[in-house]
Amino acid sequence: MTLPAETDDHERLREQVAEDFRRVNRLVRAGPADEWASLNLTMAQVKALFILAAHEPCRMGQLAQCLSVSLPSATGTVDRLVQAGLVERLADPDDRRLVLVRLTEAGRTLVEQLREGRRARLMAGLQRLSPADLAALAQGLRALAVALAELENGEPRGAALAAESER
Image (tube, rainbow, N blue to C red; front, side, top):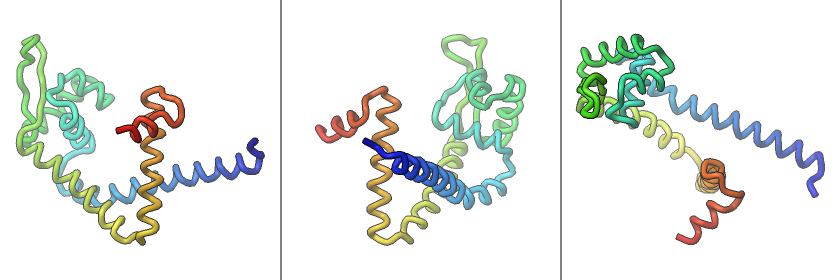
């Protein structure tokens, strides 16, 4: 049986972990944000590049939906990215009335450079941890990944860990 004090402490700890997680994400993004500012791209354009990297080729309507903007707004964003040589338009082979958008090689290279900037900043932070703190962080992140996988898959608590152990 869980005592009320234990529940309150557990809730406070979860809140602290969530806040620390947000802070770490903010700090990891802080370095690359300076790099992004020098690119002369809007945040919508950068977001479009990352969406396309994950879902290319993408119909303009899908891109607009992912960006949470109107189709004309997404079209303007893509126009500027085409002018910059970062994306290209092509006809949808299934419906020639529709337009697909995908990254050019220059666009893929830029997205990879931006991702690497974040990764390098994270690695620099991890390098400053003691071996004990790094091990504890690794264990905690693995447990969180398992718990989130269970939620995503609709599995009962502990099912993802058991399945992973069987591999």
